[in-house]
Length: 590
Ligand code: KIV
Ligand code: ZN
Image 1 (cartoon, rainbow, N blue to C red):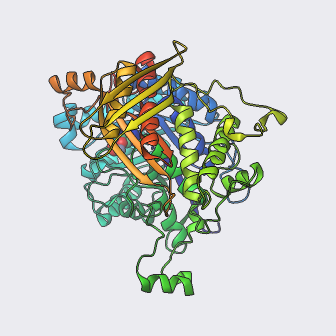
Image 2 (cartoon, helix red, strand yellow):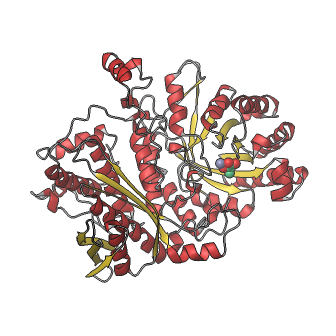
Image 3 (cartoon, rainbow, N blue to C red):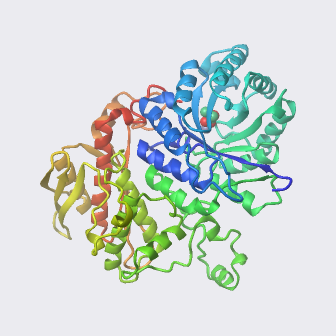
C-alpha cells in the first residue's frame, strides 16, 4: 500500500475479553478461537495471563505450540504472510514475566507484554509506590523481559489519566530497557477522542527514543468511545491497535476489532494505514466468539449485529432494491454476511453442503473432519424436517452447535478423524454418530404440559463414565422447561443455578429453528461466594465459574434440554480437572 503504514492488529479477546463478567472459556474453546483469529489474519494474539493459574498457563502454552505455527489463510497478496505472534501478559514482576515467557516461547513468533500503572491514582492507592519507584521497576523489569525475549511490549496502565510528562519519562525508560511496543491504555475509558488523540501525538513527539518503538492504542468503552478513541490514536501516530471481537472485555468492553477495520475499509483516504485482516470472516468469527463465550451480540451492534444489514422501513427497502448504495455503506458480503440465502434442501449432497459452508466462512480447516461429519448429519436431519429448506441462519446454528458439543468436555474430540474415503457418511446420514466425548447425552425425553395441569418431564440420559442409562422424572410449577432441567439435575445429582436462558430463532418463517443458550453455575459455589464475596467483584457470583451450553432444534424444549446438558458437561468436566479451570483457581487476578 503506497505511502501507508501497516496497522498491527493485536487481539486481546482471550485476555481482556475473557475478563468480561460471566465469560469462561475452556482450553479447547480458546484454541478453537485462536485458530479462527489466525485465519482472520490477526497479527498479534494476546492468548492470556499465564501466571493467573495453571489452567491459563496451559491454554497459552497450547495456543503457542498448536496455533503459533499455523499459516492457513495468511499467505498471498494483501495477507500478513507470517505466523501470528503469540503474546502473554505479565505484571512487572519477575515471576509473571518468566511464566509468560515460558508459556509463549514455543511459538515461532512470541511476545511478552508487561504492565505497570503510572497514574498518580494507581500509584498512590493501588501500588503504594512513588513515581521514582515506578520508573525503577519499569527499567528493571523491562530489562529482565528483554533478557528472555526480543519482542517486548510495555503498558503504563491507566495512561489515560497519567501525567503526560511523567508518562514520557516512563516510556523513554521502557524503550531504553528494550521495549519495542508501547501500549497506551485508557484503562477506565475516561478519555474523549480529541484528548486521546492528543495524548498519542504528545507521547510520539516528546518521548526520547520514540522512533525506535511502535505506539499502540488500548481503549475501554465505558463512555461508548472506544472505537472513536482508537481511530483518533491511529490518526495521531499509533500503528498498533488492541481490540477484541464483538468489543467484549472488562465492564463495558474494549474496542471492537471489526469496527476499527471496517472504518479503515470504508474510509481508505482518511487513515494513514492499511490492514491485512480478512474482513469476510468477521461474521462467522463474531458468531463463534459469542456462541462459545456465551456473550450475546446486541442486535444493533455495528458490523456484526443481527440488524446491521436489515432495512425495515418501506422507504429504505425501496431504495435498497433500486440501488444498494442508497442505504448501505458496507457490502454485507464484505463482512461475511450472506443475503442471497439460497436454501439447501434434503436432496443437497455433501458437495453442496461443503460449498455452502465455505461461502459462509467455514472453509479450509475451520471444521475438523469429525465436526464436518456431525454438521452434515445434523443438516440432513434438519433438511428432512424443514419443508422450506435449510437457511444460512440454520447453517450457522448447526456449526455453532457442533462446535459447542465437541468442545464441551474441554478435551479434544476422541472420535478418530476419518481418513480418505471413510469420511463418506453412511447412506442415511442422520444415522452418523454425533461428535461426542461428553459425560452425558440425551437418550429420550417425554414432556407433558398444558393449561390446568402440572408440567412433568421424564428423561433418560446416558452416562458415559458408568456406561449406563439413567431415567428420572420431575414436575415443576413454572413450566415444562423447568421440569426438564430439574429431571436432569436429579439424574446427575448436581445442584445447579440457572443464570441465563435465551431462546432465539435462527431464521424467519414458521419452521425456523429455536436456538437456546443457557448459562449455569454450581449452586453450592454461588452460595459460598455470596457468604464470602471476593473484594472488587460487582455481583454476588463474581468469580464463580459459569458454563454455557448451546443447542438448536425445531422443538425448543429439545433444544433447551440439549443446551442444558451441554452446559452440565462443561461443569462436570471443570470439576473433574480443575487444573484447567480458568477463574476459580486463579491465584492472581488483574
Ligand atoms: O486496560 C488496561 O490497562 C489493560 C492493561 C493490562 C494493558 O488491559
Ligand atoms: Zn484493558
